[in-house]
Image 1 (spheres, chains in turn blue, yellow):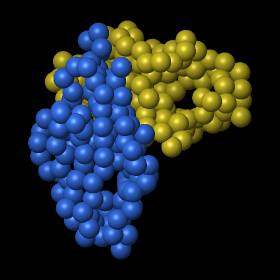
Image 2 (cartoon, each protein chain N blue to C red; image 1 turned 60 degrees about the vertical axis):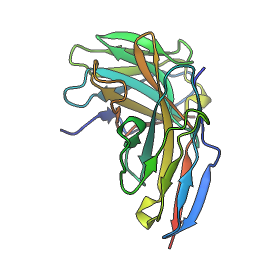
Image 3 (cartoon, each protein chain N blue to C red; image 1 turned 90 degrees about the vertical axis):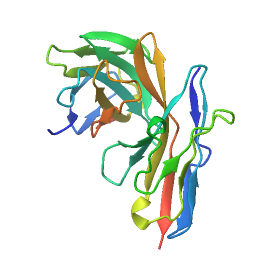
Image 4 (cartoon, chains in turn red, green; image 1 turned 180 degrees about the vertical axis):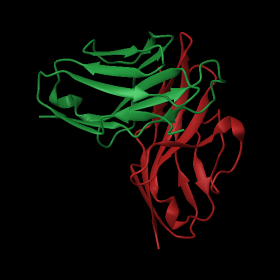
Length: 111
Length: 115
């Protein structure tokens, strides 16, 4: 079975401080992982995907297969980073792709 | 391109009633997935449609059914509504045949309240 766990429902840090949102997954196949973000009153949107190995809005995430983790990090948090963050695993079952989401972490950046 | 659109925005129903939610995918996309997002939870996969057929289904009862039309738009139907069906229903689209790491684009959702 596929599972994504985000252990922190709420995370609060001060502006300029580093931030790390944790994500652990369980999947028997080759994992493809994403971070989605939902800003206030906006729709769910892709932040980054592991295969791109890129930095988006200063965020990075590295897939660690040994620890089955895909933590999201940013060295210096900004107030506009306050949002709901979801880690998601892409699972291919019988040729159809579905996303398995964690329950999300609400990140609040304090001024 | 307006991206993925969903209607209605909000809906209030009573227990036992039936509801139909609608989704139009992003231009160029032919695959539509539906997700249920209960309050305080992440989205949960309901099912996926392409070529007008249900291709994969999550852990949802048969009360949840769907349809995809030749223009790739889709409907989600829920029969015999229960209080626990109250949630935000999200539609997502992607292009079939695109790499599996390709982004799914989400609509704004339909907020269903069952009284």
